Image (tube, rainbow, N blue to C red; front, side):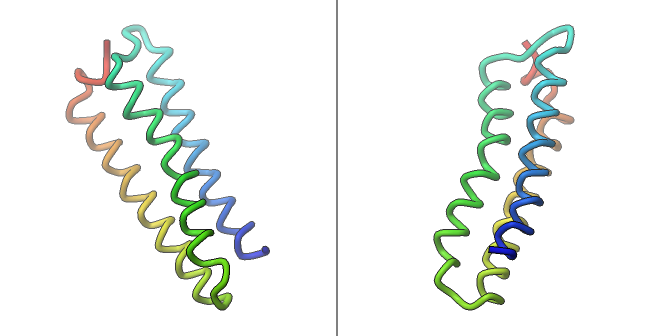
Length: 97
């Protein structure tokens, strides 16, 4: 449980960061389009889903395999977050209403 808790803090940071970005974009002067809401809400939900899947896959394994599965999931979350940031930087007009 210590390993899951430690990695859970990193996943929670990813959720908090995505939620902060969503609020900042939605409360801007132009707001968000429907597609923008979808992309940014998916960025909030994705770390929670990945943590659940990684926990389900790794919880019956040894401690180092469990940590490795959670680390791989965290890497997947980081790559997805970078894709969201790159998309919003390049196609910012598509996210804005």
